[in-house]
Length: 555
Image (cartoon, rainbow, N blue to C red; front, side, top):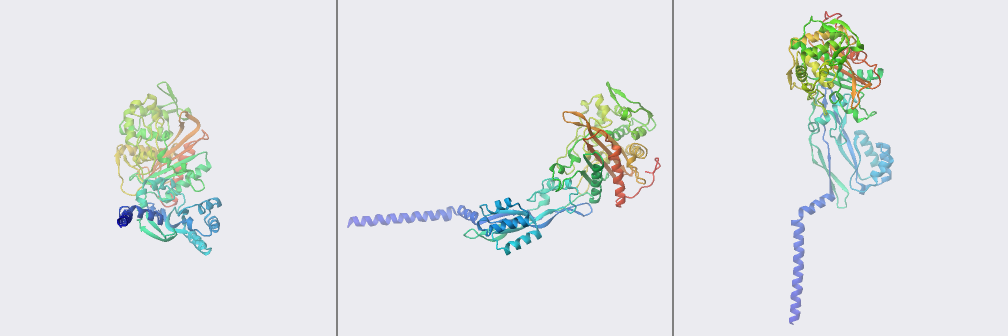
């Protein structure tokens, strides 16, 4: 009997040991590894989909919406549980515009989740859903979401920017203020049955809408500036143009326009770059007004003093010429600005000297970013004064050897307009954030008077608008290409202006560039554009005539 007892004991022992092993494994699975296995089950039985919440609206200064979200649907497919895939392919091609190859690749791939179309217009998505249901197509998933809309088309698109398919800002203000605009995303949970088929879509996290932005732009002024630029590109050899309109007292950017512009028909991403803040050019004779301001503010010139105005003028062995090498009789500063005489402004710059002129130009905002709320702004080129040669000082008086952006030039002319107070240009509506005094009010008033005379009688006359007292200075400059220097046929034209000149409410800068011809002048491009912009502003009721001025014709 003893062997039988032993066999029974060992059998019971082995059975108990096996039971303990099973219990240990169950303990491991249900307690120790519970979270791991639960996570694996959820991974198989659940999907999470994150979609953007309603993005904040961007308004112009008067409350007109420039960019906002509209309801849409994003449509997905559970490929393992799709029915009638061949009908679904046809429906995708016919209703959503997919190519047949793309539709097949989406429908016949393996997986529990495939995006078929994102951000589909509400009506189109509902029609698609109804047709799919009527044809017995199953496995489709519909998620309510939002789609960005621009009610004025591509108006100010380089300023506003674009969003990607996930609702993230990728350019312009949409990028700069993405965190404010986008809010908190919404999360959907797809719960699947044991066989993997989806049976419930649950809103797991409700998300939160983004915040709105109010801009300083006036969409009416933006539109008329864009129209003027486009028309000039159609009627002249200009390759591109930009225009900036500021409120000189507040730094508010009322318009920041460029042409050509990005559009669905012309989707060149380079056109999304706001080149008024990203690209540098030599400002030409528009700089003469700023050099004259520095000299007047330092008391180095007077109203009656006459300057020798013959051409050429030799500086350090280099012949500096007036336009067309034209010589003039002796001129005072007012007339030299009106006729844009290089050789007179060379003498004015020499009196100021490199250190002081550099100091004034720095205060005017050159050589540093303005801080405007746009991506990619550059500092321009303003070398340290110790690196200036005599020729550098001389040619800087008419805008060579320095590099500026359109927004820098506009801000400097706005400071001249604002009695010597530079205000940071800004696009978000609100109080100005930065101010700096660049010159005495009396100095600015005198130079503005001279520039009012220039528009009435000199090179700026195409900008003259009766009754509006426009003042300003034009400029034409060759373009230096990297590694090539000045290249024939590459020219920049510019006009810096303000009105009314005695107490300006608006500052306008217009720039054009060409790569086609040397026969390209500010007097036939930028200057008349300023005049037409002022006339258009009046026609739209944005501005009204000022009193007549005694400076020659009424201006």
